[in-house]
Each structure stands twice: as C-alpha cells, then as structure tokens.
Length: 493
Image 1 (cartoon, helix red, strand yellow):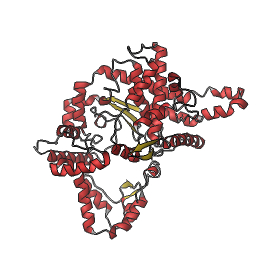
Image 2 (cartoon, rainbow, N blue to C red):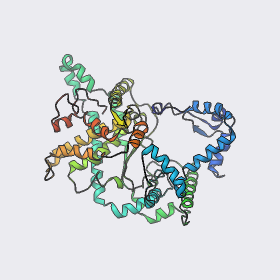
Image 3 (cartoon, one colour):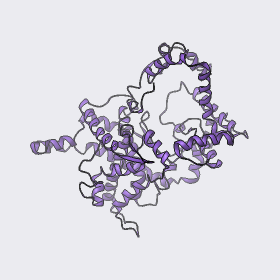
Image 4 (cartoon, rainbow, N blue to C red):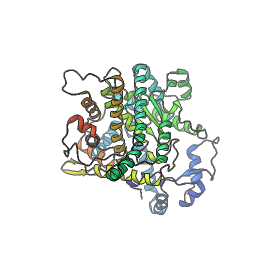
C-alpha cells in the first residue's frame, strides 16, 4: 500500500489538501475530527470538520480503509502497543535492551551497547535514537547554549559568515556566467551552436527567479544569539520539570512538554527566523530547509575535520566550504527546486528549462546507478533515483567551494602549502573535501545504507563527485578517459 521511496520525491503529488470532513469520507469508519481533538487535548484550540489537512497519499488511506476491517481487533491493539514500546526499549532494563541489540545487530552489525553515558547525553541533546533535535520545546536550545558558551569563539563565526557569503555569490555567478555567450553564438552559430546551447540551458525568466531564491536564502551559522540569554531560555522552558530519578519518566515528561508546546503555538503565525527553531548549536550536521529556504550550520560542525579558524583557507573551503555549497545546492536539487524563495510549493520553472534540468539530473541518476558495492559477496547498485538530491548537492557543493576559493586567492594571493607534504594547495583542497566522508562501516550497516539512505556511500560521495569536476582532473593530472577523468561528465549546476 505504501508509496515507494522513488515516487515520494514529487512534492506536488504529495500535496493533497482537504478538510477533515472530506478526509473522513476516505475512511468513514474512523472519526478524524474527534481523533485530532483527542491528540491536541486542549479546549482552547478548537477543531472542527472544516479544518484543512494534507493527506499526502490518499490512495494509501483508501486501501487501508478496505483492509483494516479484516484485521482482528487484538492484532490492531498489539501493533499499536508494540509501536509505542519499540520506541521505549532503550529506556528499559538490560534484558529488553539485549533484545533490541539483537535486532540492531541484523540491521547494522552492532555487537554491543553504547556506554550508558553516551546514550543519556545523546538523548538529552536530542540526537539519540528518539531523535528530538528539530522539535521546538526539546532540550536542543538549552544544550546548544551550554555548548556555544564553552566551545564556539566569535572569531570562528566571522570566518564562517564570510565563507557562506562568498559561496552564495559564486552560485549566483554560476547562474549568470553564460549570459555573455549570446554574442559569441551570433559569431560562431554554425560551429559552436550545439555546444553553447548545451551549456546555456537556463532561460532568463527562470534565471531571474533562481537569483531571487538565492538572495532570499537565509543562513543560520553557529547559533542564535538569543540562546545565550538565560532569561529567554528559562522562559522558553517554563513548566518543564525533569527532577525524577527515573530516566524514562524524565523522557516522557519532556515528550509531554514538547506536545503541549506545539498545541500552545498551534494557531500562531510561523516565524521562519525564530531563534527557537535555530538555536541548536551542539550537533555535527548541516541542513537546508525547503519550507524556510534556509541553510543551517550549527556550531558543532564548525570544528574538527570540517573547520578551524586558524587553518589555511584551502582546507576550510575544501571541508566546510563544500558543505556550505552542498546545502545551497539543495535549494536547487530535484526536491528543493520545487519550492520558491519563500518556501512555497510553486512551479517557478519555464517548461523548456525544466526539461533541460531533468535531462541533466537524469545524467546524475544514471551515473550513480552504475556504482556498486559488494556486501558479503552480494553486489548492490546505488539507487540513483533516491540519492539524486544528495548527489546533485555534492557535485554542486564541490564546484561552488572550489571556485569561491579560486576567487579568494585572486583577491588575497596564493597560500603556502602545508609543510612536509608533497601536495599543492589545490590538491589539499580536494584531500580536505574527501577526508570529511572517510568512514568505516560494518557490512550490515553498508547494506542498510545502500538500500535506504538518501546519501550514496561515502566513497561515491567523493569519487562520484570528483570524476565530474574538470578542476580535479587538472589539479591531479588525471589522463583523459581514465576512471577519475571520464569523457562523459555529469553536471546540473
């Protein structure tokens, strides 16, 4: 009944707004209005049958309505209870956690439990198994404040701000750089028409809207300054009491607090720039939000292998700079491109340009679909459709960061190479860009990732992107037609 992952990338197809009353007709045996009232459980937030909802996949609901009467009530009750308990097992006793470990061993190859301190710290920060990082009302802002005060200097934020600004400018330059070819087309129309048409694939109307989207893209770097204000933080968490000696009870109290928080703000206008949704500093990750058209680089990722404020720029641009370009490009990948600069689901593409875009994306799909990994003697192909968004972002990220660094050297001069290493600054850019995806996976985890993860395995995030970059081939003298410098290269941006 469920829609395959490959068919869940079209946001328009998953946008089926209707009233609760209309939705109820698809599943008449269940009172949807009462169900939503029970979930919200607050008389101050009235719900009636005219409330607008989005039923992402109506056909699923219709099929479920036909199927459920054939399922015994006891089976339904057992399933509901099990789904709840499954999320609580990590809070349970050792016997239950050993059962969970057996289950995880099959999926990931994990052979022993994480230390208890690690489990507790991850859960508190919102990065644990019950992932709460993105939830307003979670402890993300409190933990982020503690981390930012202790570990993130203001100098790091300034350098990161400049990098984001430079790379955004480079993306805009990439949108514009082929305009000058109009005159050349007139001069060499016969000889170069095919080549130039292939390069200059975006029409002026779509290009202008793309520029607008980049201009409106809001960066959140490091942390929101409000989280350093103890008064604001205390007000934000007013009513939250986590004084129980029970780990489970504290978690359930936090979940209740989060749910009540969302009910309380249910009718409030959405503020895409609110510090409450961008205060989580303590995480090693970065994000693009299509609904907000925002890019986020929490303080946690502005450290370690990704970034240091005293490193040569080629290392920072090759590592965190590539991540910055990656997140910017997500606004123009196969799913991000479906929303405009205000985060609205709007088709802002001219038909011919959209057609050319899809052709370029198909090149990426086909290329990555031919990459394989061997797991316990089984050859698995990367899913080029499900990973296309991340692959488009990876390729664009390396290109934008490299070109932004090139511009920086023209303005500030060439940097010295690292002492004791036989590599040029440009080569060290590529090495830094590869190092961030270095990992070792158990075979079970690798198989699970290939089958379910929207990211390609690390080796292809690097080699798949590098073989498409002509600058990489030049910097490493890769012979034309070799594995890392193929004749056919794919490029969306």
